Image 1 (cartoon, protein in one colour):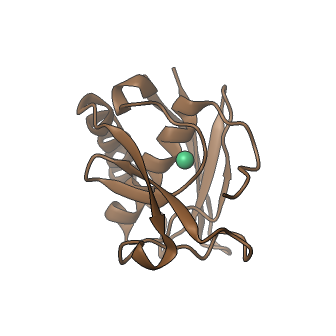
Image 2 (cartoon, rainbow, N blue to C red):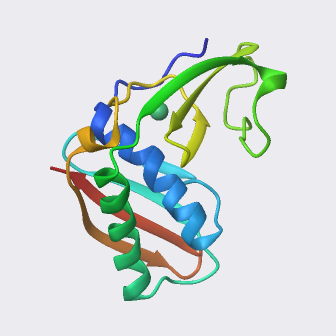
Length: 149
Ligand SMILES: [Zn+2]
């Protein structure tokens, strides 16, 4: 098993999984390339084709609220590297990652390899509050700042 590099606050860390998939689905982007997840405030950055509109930003928040309300179960399973489902990217695991991968699923909504700590279902995340966003036109980088309350 790989070591998780930081001891994260499980509700915020689980929100990180959800927000990654919300962004992938809404914008067709990759999961965040940079994330700082903390108990009080978190931020995640994504590479996007263009700056999201106000409505799109609202849609991010609405989707997060909907997924939390749905109380999706968070489960994990151990699979061999060659049995990882198609579309699940392992390229962020260290090169010396073990042959057995821990996959974390949130309902049927998201699956990704992770050994961090999570809540058991999405309602335990609490309330997702979008604090603000930043757009870097040069980098085409969209940063989402949020907190869990
Ligand atoms: Zn995780």
